[in-house]
Length: 69
Image (tube, rainbow, N blue to C red):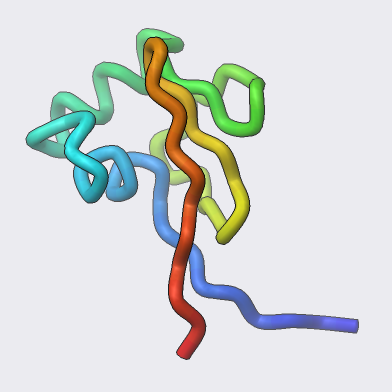
């Protein structure tokens, strides 16, 4: 069964939630290993996130919530 879901790239998500004011800063956070996705260090800024993914930066946790169209 295939389901089409909305996605957002990790670097875009970090800008969207206000963790990084620019894409360059988001890239540095990710490359430095400071971002976890679902509890695992993620170093790919293009990692596609879907609703329900948990992104952790420092002591802040964010749950991805994307609207379906």
